[in-house]
Image 1 (cartoon, rainbow, N blue to C red):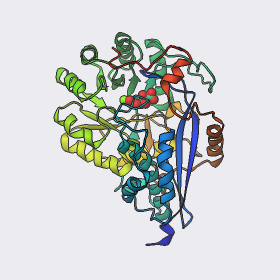
Image 2 (image 1 turned 60 degrees about the horizontal axis):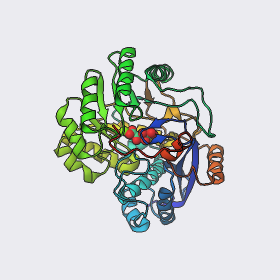
Image 3 (image 1 turned 30 degrees about the vertical axis):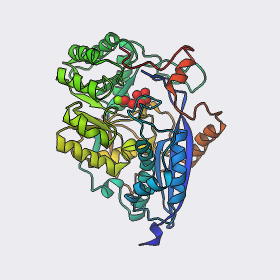
Image 4 (image 1 turned 90 degrees about the vertical axis):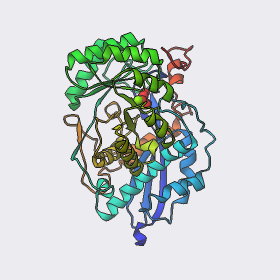
Amino acid sequence: MDTALLIDEVRLTPILIADPPLLNTQGVHQPYTPRLVVEVVTRGGVTGIGETYGDGKYLELARPLAAALPGRPVSDVNGLFALADEVCGDSRAADERVDAGGLRGVQTADKLRLSVVSGFEVACLDALGKAVGLPVHALLGGKVRDRVEYSAYLFYRWAEHPAGGERDDWGAALDPAGVVAQARRFSRDHGFSSFKLKGGVFPPDEEIAAVRALAEAFPGQPLRLDPNGAWSAETSLYVAEQLKDVLEYLEDPASGTDAMAAVSAGTDVPLATNMCVTTLAEVPEAFARDAVQVVLSDHHYWGGLHRTRELAAICRLHGVGLSMHSNTHLGISLAAMTHVAATVPNLDYACDSHYPWQTEDVITTRHVFEDGRLTVPDAPGLGVELDRDRLAALHRRWLDDDGTMRERDDAAAMRKAEPEWRTPSIPRW
Ligand SMILES: O=C([O-])C(=O)C[C@H](O)[C@@H](O)C(=O)[O-]
Ligand SMILES: [Mg+2]
């Protein structure tokens, strides 16, 4: 073993990044949201970077893993899982419920640990790639496409946060005209040609009207609607019937395998998910019952880039489509998504990305979408560089926070505008 490839040091930097007032069925995004930047430094002096969720329960698991890594080869990414099992222990915060954000499916101790491991896996792959002079996609077996397509991620939103936060010039989008105006700007600025609307915010007929308005504005272009499981099976079937001629897929209309299977049995509109199938344990039943036709992988909670490729193989075997889910994320995670997406032959749909909503980043050069696509980097590692000044500034914001922003809580953010707001029970409609 080349000792230059041994890990010398691991740095964890929690940060808070600005997030606009985007609405979902749970509430609204906070003005700032936590992320964690992982740096892995080798004895040879190469630094690799990764990114994952930054709430306290993730940090709690990341710290012992970071402490256990020095002395291990940066190339041993498969060993990260056993190491995490050994040193992280069970997270007290994890249980089998839908998570606090309520948007990402079950929250098991395993899934939490995998989300942490993913940040380290990406950092190790970045360091390894830089050390041997290969892009991450080459370490994953090589790219099968030069560009990766993303879709516009449309949100109902307010013009500004009710209390504090950064301002932007998007204005409010609370009706079909507002949604179409947002889509036009996404299309003009980034060239996106497929559109996903985050639903579950307004009564279904209003959201049906918004999707209809999109279909009129962008005839024939792929459209998706995602209420994060907020509807009953009956409501889901009603929406599917109303929009069957324009939807590419309906994403998590209802919550849980039973309800999704019932919806799937009653419509030809494909159902996609980043809530019903988010762990390997959920795959057999959901696939056997044909509850979902498209899985939105997320390399964070599936445990990194190699595990994403394993999920892709499982989907390929079962004839289930594959796309990618996104949460509020920065350029490191977008680079990681792009590398793994480039290597997956059966990536059947444009991937989600929140990136255009994120005005702050920790990389020196922002990613630029052209025709809704990112060119797959061929530079060593991820092909992005850390901007240490920005990282320090965003970490300073995290340090200065009194604790309210360090845990993402969309319902708490909503209470700033509606003090009586409680996380709606599901099904909401
Ligand atoms: O279902 C999804 O696509 C997501 O979970 C993405 C995000 O969490 C989105 O819902 C949000 O940030 O409000
Ligand atoms: Mg979703």
